[in-house]
Amino acid sequence: MMFLLFTVADAAVICSVPVVCLLIEFPTNIYIALLLAFTVFILMNNLPSVCPGARSRLKVLYGGAVLLTAFLVSMTVLSALLIYRIASGQFIPNADIAYIIFAVLCGFIVFVNGIVRIYVTSVQAGIKLRVLAAVFAFIPIVNLVFMIKLIVTAKRETMYEIAYDEREKVFAADKVCATKYPLLMVHGVFFRDSRLLNYWGRVPAALERCGAVVRYGGQQSALSVEASAKELAARIEQTCKELGCEKLNIIAHSKGGLDSRFAISELGCGKYVASLTTVCTPHRGCIFVENIYDRIPEAGRQKMAAAYNAAARRAGDTAPDFLAAVGDLRESVCIARDEELKDDPGVYYQSVGAAAKDRKSGRFPLNISLPMVNRTDGENDGLVSVASSRHGEDHRVLRVPGRRGITHADMIDLNRENIPDFDVRGFYIGLVSELRERGL
Image: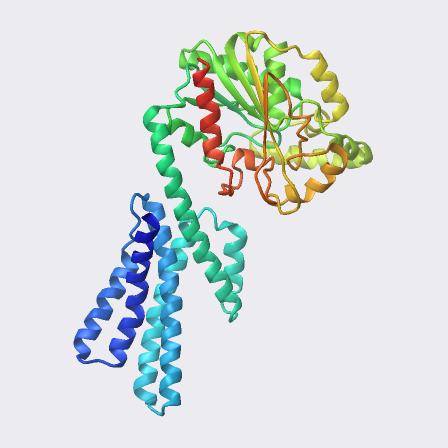
């Protein structure tokens, strides 16, 4: 039914363009035709598309797709009319050229309006498609390919988001993520928690709409596991005092899971933690990291470390340590630590792994690293093997049909990508709702 409404809305706007063109070309009353053309033109360029149940952003986005479609249809009709008049000997230079200039100008306004709407509101179009569409904007045929791709992307995004919003409304109404203890979401290595760009993408906002209370780990981007764990331990205790709660449910990604385990087992944080869910955490390390680390000469390692540490300080880290962070991800180091760290019996532990498939799995650079990690570590998410991600009472591995796969970055919604057969927001809503059902 929703698709039918979209189709009717599309047809009403798109078909009005060639109809108006025909009315102007073969008018019974030129004034009525011009008035109709002006009215349709104003409405098209100022009103969002008809999208039942859609948020304002999606209405504007879908409207952009409709406008670009209208532009393509109108230019096709105008070209056909011009060819017909020339072929039939009815072409009148002065009158027809003036009409063509006017029509092309109107079409250009529709085109710009449509492009701006999509560029400003689309999440799924991505930087690559935007840049390529702009670069090839004036190259015939190629520009049509990218314009059609923009239209399809915008329409798919609108459909996907509206369907997701409908599902989330049900979860939000039932407060399925209103856990007994608040959530502490802990980031991985080489990232920081930022208000401007959330490490977890669209996930935290979705959890909060469904009743969760969310806070963040806040540790520096690159430290040893022990040093990060000390910062995290202080944050855990501070958050419990701030929220007036006894414990927290920790959801930790990548190295953040190692930091969290150390804080619980070695720094006395078990009394503040109800559960620890590790996501794509290398509990037994990364063989490929060890291989690369050992092959790079000491001088090269120091140079890389100096460059990263300088950049991290400018970004807000007080004492970044690139080599300590990377070194603590090596297989030999992680296996030794994994054997030493004893799980707290009062904490519920579970883990999540993900499996990518080939170079079509995800985006750069994980699609490049995947084959290399495959050779050394086995099935993996582009960085962490499925085997290394296992820890706790429950372990699940996320896989999808086809060639897409799920990567390390997909698990934190890094690219804000709507992946077929994998709803990252829905996955975390389900994960947190399970904690709630456990009484946590």
